[in-house]
Image (cartoon, rainbow, N blue to C red; front, side, top):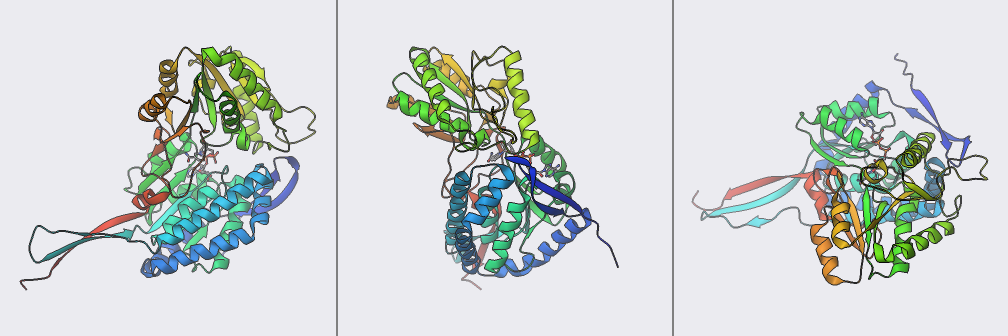
Length: 465
Ligand code: NAD
């Protein structure tokens, strides 16, 4: 008999760190290898299951997710600090993602092409890859996993999913909903564990044919270093340092409101959060005053949750201190929220006098911190907004149609917004960035097919035999 000793991890509520909200058993390295082997075996049947049937399974999971919306939202909110309302929005989005990809099961998976040769038929078929490893972060514990798992499954792959240990209980719940929906054994397996152990097994396992990862640039780079030479397909969705530009002709009230929402929603812990704003000098004072007013409206503890963990709390506070030392001027917030006896709460924070040499203008902080920068005109704004290693999303607020189109053309990002905040994604549209924000095919929409399938090109001699 073999005795397996697993590490037990206790999850704590970032709003009340003294409260243990549950435990999760972390898999061993050997168990993870067994999961991958089983997923590889399950692939044989799953790839031959009709895609209509595979899609139907996603639809049933969407129904179950909606029926359990309260439980999933509550669990995730307690686990990683997002407010319950924010989580309800995310769970609804998760259900839409499942429904979109459920429909994919009924769509064409190839095309017939004209052949140059008489008596030959030429066509393409999209076929699955095999075992896909999905490695996901804690900040969208429902939507991000689903926008990887749903397309992977509907196109016929089996999936081994490693959620972040910071959102492990939510991951477990999502896995159970797929089980309830009737997913065959080993077609989707949730593996709980640390990146350095369980994650590493997924990177190295020869049966894993593709890795879809969302997370930090540091871990993304280590994935490229370890799996880059293995011929696995790799998709990395990484960090952002998203800029907004507010021009003098914009609707100033709307621009300030949406910029603040973009910066502070989900306590700034979104890869698409607005973290720099460039304001034309003629309206700078007015916009800054409005931004501060908007920040005052945020009720920390109700409309804005805590940051997700002690690690996040310390790293955001350190970034704030660094900004002060580098000479940025703190005009709002700037530290732990007063009057909270516990919880990782940080005030919405605004800095001015920011230069592009400062960390606050260049590094992803992943917290409720906004850098405000005065610019002479639109040309300076676009130049500075593009001066970043990241290229995920960017916004412009303007009523000038030429400048809006110019921005769409010249902005070096994957997601461009005009008169809206930097965040936001819909399941039917491709999602992803440029520069150091993404590597590999885009996620969601029809673009997802590029990553989760490969082609077979078929030629049939129909005459002259
Ligand atoms: P992270 O990189 O720390 O972890 C992400 C996942 O990778 C987790 O499941 C973790 O366990 C795993 N991991 C860690 N080390 C690993 C290793 N050596 N091998 C394999 N797996 C490993 O990121 P996080 O803190 O969970 O999430 C925050 C980051 O995610 C931010 O940088 C944010 O910008 C980014 N993010 C990007 C997008 C996007 O679509 N571009 C969306 C959300 C979050």
